[in-house]
Image 1: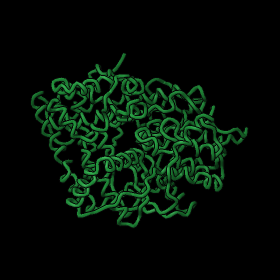
Image 2 (image 1 turned 60 degrees about the vertical axis):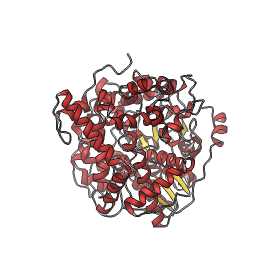
Image 3 (image 1 turned 180 degrees about the vertical axis):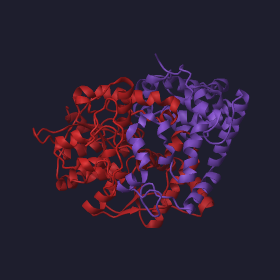
Image 4 (image 1 turned 90 degrees about the vertical axis):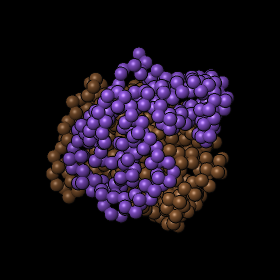
Length: 236
Length: 358
């Protein structure tokens, strides 16, 4: 066995996801990502089954592992009870631990996801917040969302939310003592280490690429990873 | 729809759903886009059904979107979820309801992980105690909020002012049901009806007078895909998945779509708008689009709740054609008014989708 395969084998999600794949391709047939992207979950399973570290490193550095939408449709249909979607989750974790995620366009997006979603959990107690869904970044939300954002307090009151309020309810302000507990959980369980790694490896990649790196979203590297699509990912 | 065979299948997938005394956990996405649905759920539970529901201010996200965008490690997610269970335990409850499908899927996955890998449960207990001094008990009963509405669908039907029926013809409305992927694709036996033919929304539609549309891409993902929507460069995946569903359902001329997932109703609503702006393509009759609803919005509409308190005005695809078809009374002038009737202007009209300004 390779060193990386051994490392994968310590992840319970890997243990649950891959038990002698027979390469039948049922996962690829049902996979929404395989229909859209140049992606084939069957080959991901084949590659990992080789237990060849060189091939696994290639996979960890590739665009391939970032195409899955984690819908888990593959779980329902696999005749062997395998879960390529869960295998991808384990591979993505390892790619981030080792810093290989910065070697692909789709992998580099992890920094934007950490800042846009991960940090919101620590600051607001929830993964998303209306203040951060700027209509300018989300034209697909349409004029309804733009109007709603202009009148957020009134609309939320009308719909029965407790926007930024004390006590229970939708969109309430999460008490500081609760946010403190969440922060401590992230520190104790490795969540903060993951965040620091994403920043560290991304900063090194930005320097290598000669792209300005900074905090938040207002810097060249963030804008690049959030918007770049080299148009080689999809099927014709 | 030839339902006999499918009914035999879903009968094999029945789950136990607690009768009363629930701890309720809110959803990241639903709070932002469908707060009226969570409000309707608590109102139905308390006012219509007389149930005991704990709406606790101290709970948080389960981290689900962070977990499925792969920026939050499994150990962190397990421990945050253990904290949610600790809050439930502390409040004196043992029946847990998740408002979110991603959460429901994660809770299910983690409880199963703890069963199959007991060392992960012990590690989680240690992490939680070390971080917060808290202890917890695993829920006796875990349900998604749609399971609860499904369980009490006939009681709701008995109290309803309206049914999913065309007021002019008396014919049942044709309803597309869309189930969030994480409801039962990973653990079919944890969802009512399983993964291939889930019955949780179909049961509601049948009890409330509608007719389910069985179309080829019924089980296809809406296209959220977590990172596939959250990053601007990836959104082509998301809209392509929704479009595949619209193209597949359109020949059946559905009157409406009902969903049980936080993201799906938003995406199926917004991508219809985006497709219309990008290509001039609209679905449904007379550029009306196919209106998309949460199951609580539908229950609330049928119970006679004010559509503008339910939040139907913040849909991009207008709900009015459906309200009119059923014969639901509403005040068109109040649609974009504030909570005290104040004028808040109106959103701009889309280029193609029909817009009801009055």
